[in-house]
Each structure stands twice: as structure tokens, then as C-alpha cells.
Image (cartoon, rainbow, N blue to C red):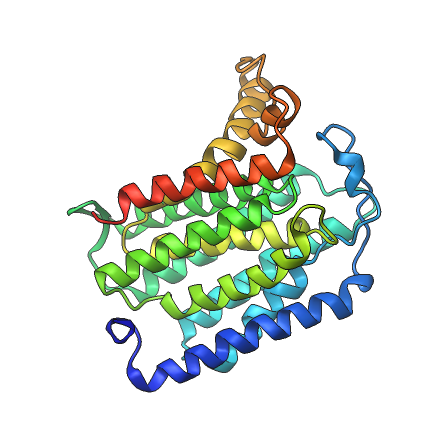
Length: 316
């Protein structure tokens, strides 16, 4: 049934791209890992000291590998070129933060996230016919272009930041991302949507190569360079699917794990409202510190939960 999404003439190229992508990404990660900045450990994270000295910022390698493969194997358009550029920019903002001796301020990163999201939102509106719609199960709602751009900015900002916050356990963020991207691919497969399907498989391939070296105990870390770009890519998948609200289901574990911490900190900082006083955030720190879960148990349980959640939505 692969021909429902990919023409038969493209299937050989697809398989070649997947195989080459995995081999090249894994090779690049092994060869260039010693060129990456080193993690200093995280004082307030559970087992944060165990990360000290490991290569950090591996996202620069697997994101550039994905973009290179996409340029070689995927049809190129002005729209996709802009998205690739924003993906690289999101990766670079994370990489330079990973590399900096003093971490960038949250406000600096928030402004950069806003600009990236704004460009992506305007790009989508510019290349997709009016009226713009947001699908919800079997219904759809028409919305003005300006409102779509505003909602796209919110979606992208949230996706970048919850993915970033979830990156705190070996293999966790990358594994959940594989499930989320795979869910969007299966949704495209089931509903015959060709947009982004090939790029999803290529991205998953590069991410799996990284996970070979990031499984607990990890040899290297993706850093903000990886998590921020992954968050942007997932948001773009939600937009390209024509059903952006699928993000709520296919990324629900990201939203719970990383999102609750963002809400907790924001309410306390800006409104002086304290919530979840007895709950550590991100939630992956809570289950490890307060519940005694191992890193492996945390990754497996979170990934299984996301698989179940996605499976409930895919048939609709």
C-alpha cells in the first residue's frame, strides 16, 4: 500500500535515502562527537551530574544530516526551502546556547522562537490556498489568515519549548519524538496525505541513528540544538497535516512532561500563583526522584503512553 503515498518510481529512492540517512548520520555522529561542546551537568536535575563531560549539541549533526538528505532526495520548493532554513536556524540557536559558557537568557530564546514561528506561519499562509481551515476529526473550521498565523506562532512556540523541557533523560525526548513523527506519518498513510510523508521517514531515520548513541547510558546528548529543531519539525507536521489540533494528541506526553513545568514557572513568575507544590517538573524528574523510577522505566512508560494515545486517534 506504499504506493498510496509514494509513486512506485519513488519507492527505490525512498529506501535508498532511508538506508543512506541512517548510515551517514551514525557515521557523522561517531566521527564528529569529539568536536562538540561538553556538558557541564545540571545542578537541579535528577542525576544531572551524570551528564557532565559528555558531548552535547549532537542535534547539529543529525539535523544537518536530515537537511542534506532532504535536499538530495526530496522535491525542492520555495516553501520547503524556507522550512529547512528555519529548521537549521532553530538548531543553530540551540547549538550556540549549548556551546555558550553562560546560558542564553530565556527572553532572548523566546524572541528567537517568535521570529522563527512568525516566518513559518507567514510562509504556510502564503503557499496554501484560501480559505484556511483547521480540521477537527471529521469537521473543519475556516479561519482568517491573520488568525492562522497567530495560532501557528503559538503552536510552534509551545512545541519547541515542551520538546526542549522533555530532554532530560537519556533517550526520552528522541524516543517520544519518533512516536510522534511516526503517528503523523501513519495518519498521512491512512488518509492518503502526501505532504511531508517522505520527510518524516528521513527525519526519523536520522533520529534513530542518534538514539543508537543516546540510549541509557548515553554517549552523547542532543542538547538544545536537537530538541528545539525537533519541536519545530513536529509543529510543521501538524500544520502540513491540515489538522493542527492533532498536535494535542500526538504530542500529549511532551505537553504533560514539559508543558506543566512551563505553566508552573510562568504562573509563579508573572502572576505569583503557586501550583503543583509537591510535584517536581519536568514530570520525568518527579517520577525518578519521588517515585523511584529508573531512567529506562521512565523512557519506556512515557513512550508506551504516547503510543496508546496516538493509537486512539489514528483511526478517526
